Length: 146
Image 1 (cartoon, one colour):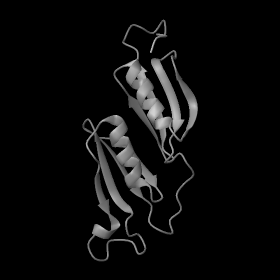
Image 2 (cartoon, one colour):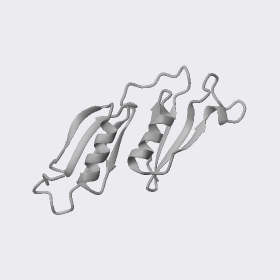
Image 3 (cartoon, rainbow, N blue to C red):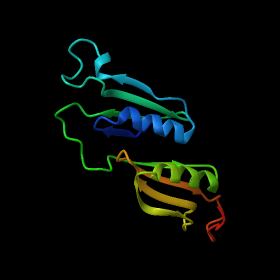
């Protein structure tokens, strides 16, 4: 069994996944538009909207779509994605890029469970938790330098 986050947007799916690919340094997302669906499988009035998208995050898919016209989008955030990175510097960089135009819920800082942790809702309405986990056995102190 595998778990993959699935994000919903209201017309900004392609822009959001393109931004995530750029920020996270991954290949461009695979996009399937409602217009590309076989006859009768699309949604009326959904031209240009994304029916299904997938962004490869190092072998873990981040999937997404735009809701069809007339379907209400739930209140943001539509999901929180927990993103573990390999260094404090990368945590700071990714957090700052995702926070641009968004709302920081928990500022990036050392915590009792990670060298760096921060939580935000980006400009597309997606919730992100960014952290650089501390090595096993280093639970006693939090590193202060970025």
